[in-house]
Length: 241
Image (cartoon, rainbow, N blue to C red; front, side, top):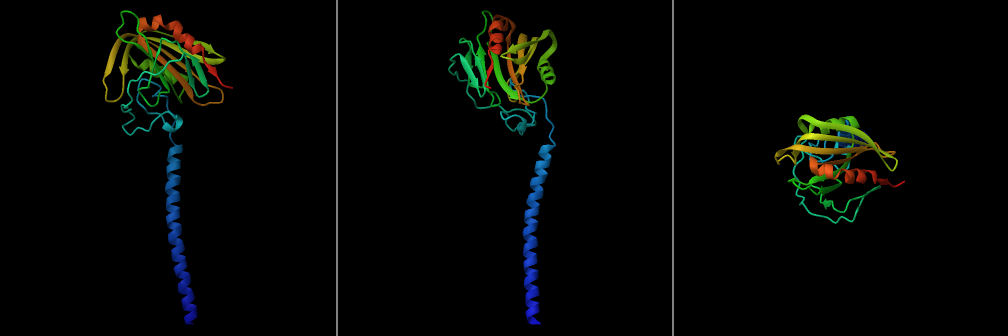
């Protein structure tokens, strides 16, 4: 009888220990599953961070170049110094390659979400250089064009759209002129720049879901003087096969 009671007590103790272990394991599993489920429910948003330190609201998982931002979707300023890099006439980014005018000034990107940045030398009489940035993210072509248009206050003075061929890659190019709201981060002021012009290029590579963005903007005289260079740069794209 005593031996039976001892066995029962031992079995009960083992059962309690086993249940406690299962409880810890199942709790972690549930929390993990909950987190993964929440992540899967995130919607894919338009590329809000292709350049110019626009508000970062797209899902960081959709773009490896985006940083998680806890400040209400607004990108915080970076500590990146405005350093000049060597311009050897070529730009190589993963499988993408361009020929770059030697007069352009390659700089350390002001934002971590940018892959490359160049200063476009200003035309005589203009006060500011132009700026060209390269990035990638998800979203649709139409939504991103609408976002770029939204960076101009008032009504656009001019706008047009064309398609370029860059080594067999279709590039959608928009040309916008008007009063540009130049924003350089959450803590910095937005500078209103009248008579500014922007070239915004979007393309997609085969077997990729994301889009690639090249944005060049500056005083309209500067951009007009460099239009052939900018379009030549876009058409020079070569992609590894």
